[in-house]
Length: 286
View 1 (tube, rainbow, N blue to C red):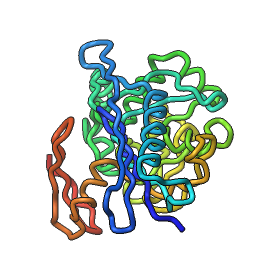
View 2 (cartoon, rainbow, N blue to C red):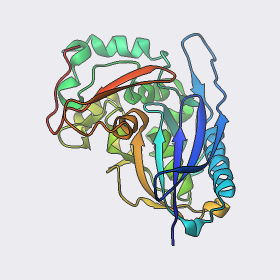
View 3 (spheres, rainbow, N blue to C red):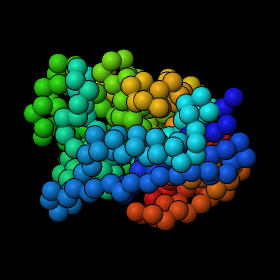
View 4 (spheres, one colour):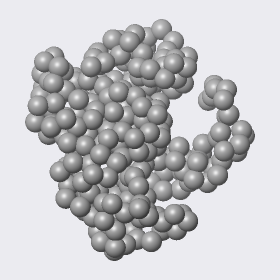
């Protein structure tokens, strides 16, 4: 009978795995630092394969420390740095480029051009809830298409897969190029600047305007459902992956902000304030 839940926390500066028992107590953990790449001022990158390898190592070590086998684990849950964007090859499963981190500002020129259109920085806000900003995944995808020939070629040939970190992890953990799932959860999808937040679907008009084919995007799933099982990673094999939530959304839930009007601040690589608006979307005034 399953005794634990295995939790993956893939952040900006490190990857962690924690093993929790039925009472919610952490019984084992492992953490590895993540190398930061700064090729130019204002640019920040991560190696997607380093992230995957570190996550797997952390999970396996936490299981060993906790004396757990795959049969002891009910499910894996994932939380991740949001917006950080990966582009990889559908045929090989290999990334075309290092991941562009959420705080990277290389897309400033792209943002400036988009803001010159009708509606300015708010031209997509009515649908996505977001202003045009270097922060969000869509402009990072557009930069990769416009500046990395391998990505442009793959997009044209429909062999490019885009995703944020949870998408990259789930894809690889469930089989990679051998049937791995190309999915995201709705909290992470909401940070792409491509999702209609009223419908919970990618917006065809925005995707077309930005030149991002919808077939390159992951399928949007709920935060809590069985997505698939781990394949090809030794002692992790057979464990189901059954939860995914962007890190700041996860922190809001973890801090118990389940009532309308409750909010939290978390302090890490940045300071992030989130507020529970309840079932009604409340447009930002800023």
